[in-house]
Amino acid sequence: QLQLQESGPGLVKSLETLSLTCTVSGASISSTGHYWGWIRQPPGKGLEWIGNIYYSGTTFYNPSLKSRVIMSVDTSRNQFSLKLSSVTAPDTAVYFCARLVGVAAILDWGQGTRVTVSS
Amino acid sequence: QSMLTQPPSASGTPGQRITISCSGSRSNIGTNDVSWYQQVPGTAPRLLIITNSHRPSGVPDQFSGSKSGTSASLVISGLQPDDEAEYYCAVWDDSLNSVIFGGGTKVTVL
Image 1 (tube, rainbow over the protein chains, first blue to last red):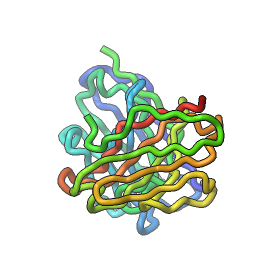
Image 2 (image 1 turned 30 degrees about the vertical axis):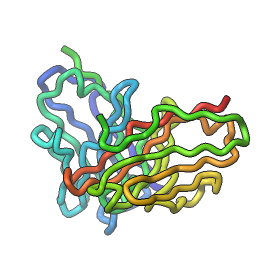
Image 3 (image 1 turned 135 degrees about the horizontal axis):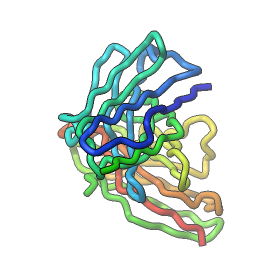
């Protein structure tokens, strides 16, 4: 059974870089037809897609975050990662990693990790 | 403001049938497949419907989805107390080259 586990600091200082990793177990990150993605949810608000990455390294990013986002994949560790630079208070959210079929249908979700941006 | 419009709330009594709409445009729902998610507070979302109307294994048949033109709908039949949750639609938008979510609909069982 597929499991996705987010890891990373729960507190990031303003204007620094948020770094999260998602460890995939129960499936290969190199499986064809699946993208791997990040979605976030600010407190009390809805879901916001951050971006997707394919095992080959192909990426799609939310245009509103594109200038600050880098996603990468490590097939040897079955992990993928998110870096979001120059964070500010609006970046405070629960960050979910996910497995998608194609680029838009989110099959499986991690439990989420709360990240707070502190001033 | 989301490019996919959902009603902020919906409610019904146990056993009732409710419909949640998701309105978009030609560049998203009009062209691509819609998926639906259920999120109970404090938990991760769960996939309910994929490719407009298909239920993944394990999703009860009380949930059904459809799409027509630039709108999609999620129907919850036989409403139960544990159906109280937030429901989101999502789709790829060809103009934005982005996944977009609806604003969410909070379902209350009266």
